[in-house]
Image (cartoon, rainbow, N blue to C red; front, side, top):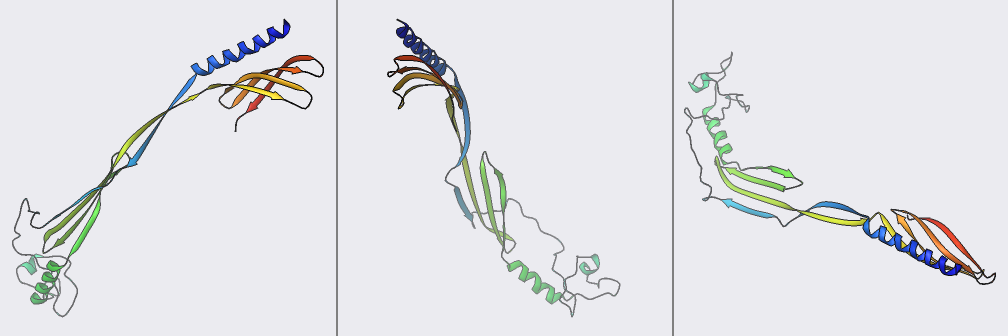
Amino acid sequence: MDLLKRVLGTIVLVGIGFIIGRKTVEEKTVIKYVDLPPIQGEVKVPDLVPKWEGFRNPIKLIYIYKGQEEKVPQTPPEITNGGGFGGDKKEVDTLESVKRTMLDWNTTRKYAGTFFKDPKIGQFDWEATVQYNTLQRLTYKYTPVREQIKETRSRKWSPFLRASANSFGQVGVGGGIYYRNFGVDVSYMRDFELTRSGYEVGFSWKF
């Protein structure tokens, strides 16, 4: 009769552990942002139409001093009116200035940058090509991201069953429960050589 009570008591304890473990669940939400395939394109002349055009009067050249290759640092009124510049009244080489201006006008320049870069919405890059004082080519590339929400459910309390046997002729059966990584278990032990029985309490830790 005592043996039956001990076995029933062990079963009841294990059953309580299972009920507690099933009802105590810890939920965790993980948010990740995943890159999607880029969206890119190109716009070229004649699709690039200026929205507004203005004419500068008088015409501004890249002015060059006579007998020198250095640029005039600005366009002062004296040059605009055809006179010299500075205290020594250096003369401007008009022909060389026109050549330098035309060379600059024919030069191709590329500009590039990033409109925005945000881990939640993605990145937008652009590149523009300018020549003849006109936007010749515009390319863009948008790499969007998608939000992924993953909900995980992990038990704070995790019940388990166990059975054991050793070389001393003892066998045991029982169960226990883990709270996160720490576990406690109780087993009913039977010694067949000494014909006696008892309980064993154990502790464990998950790494």
